[in-house]
Length: 342
Image 1 (cartoon, rainbow, N blue to C red):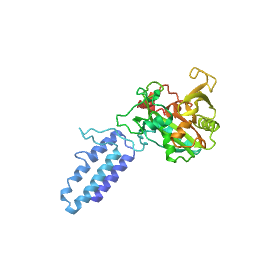
Image 2 (tube, rainbow, N blue to C red):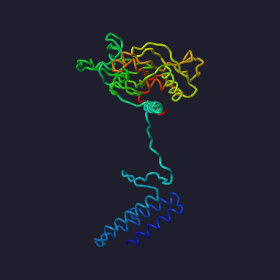
Image 3 (cartoon, rainbow, N blue to C red):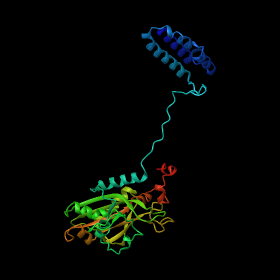
Image 4 (tube, one colour):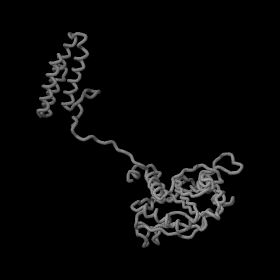
């Protein structure tokens, strides 16, 4: 029986491989696999087999039937018995679509890498924090507008006797004094904190949740030239060697002097166009750490100085050359048509 089945298999495969057309394949299918076909006749002989032979012969029978079926390129549909279209098994398979990292995730990885290469350490601090770290320690008095409930999300939780209310951090600057406490008032500090921030704003350039990266350097003899050099390095590494940066005097409670940082427009390269008007785009804030902030972190401001900067990841990414995003909210729309472009 085993030899007979093997001969049937070899014979059938040889006829099929010889180049049978569809009509011939249909005839061979009926001849070998039909209700009155060769294999059906073989199956009638099973009852006469010894009990110890039935398992082995049955397995070979199924193997022969499957081999002939595959060679013919047809399978019987489970419902109705109609033959499905043949499949060319030599064709390359269709790969399933693969996802990729979200553009914000990729931007965070690139930003981290740039700063790590010049000696910064990536740190993480709470995204739900006390009012003290988010405002009070950063030289913001109790009546400051940023501490208004129309600007900041306050958490419905008991107040701390010393640290105040619980807030969703409106900026990553809450990590500044925490980092000073971590080093126990003994610099140097060279950290970059990247985390989620929350503000009650939503328009084409703001979302209620966004990511920010905070840089903080504190050591002896740190001055504005170190700040400018760090910013220039980042701008050229992230945006490209043709882009330039500038510091523009401004006011922030936690830095003195304070600056807004601009970069040249990637469309006109600083010459001026409809997008930027004067050739510059605002990147974010920066400045020398205010002595009151150093005092809150128990750092001797007579011995140490430092600089800090805080920029939105999404906004920074949108200003990258070749990225044409006119509404920051698109990054969180979960629209596959949009995300697959990156």
